[in-house]
Image (cartoon, rainbow, N blue to C red; front, side, top):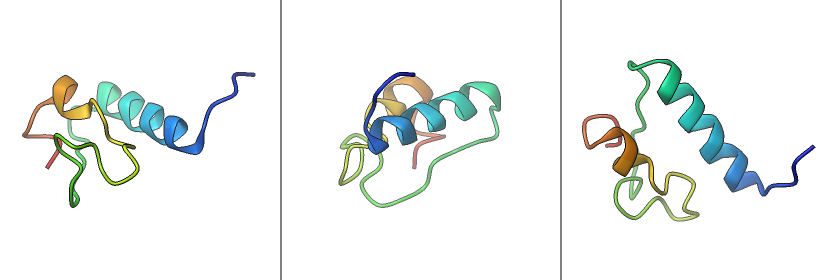
Length: 54
């Protein structure tokens, strides 16, 4: 079993679901370019674009 932080697990879960279902999106304060306060959404905008990371 891989050892990862809670934030890494959250990010991987979001990526997995967003790859699986094009209707899934992330909406929140600072989740875009910055990746959120704890960086849980870091890189999602690069991969999925501004329409799905709001």
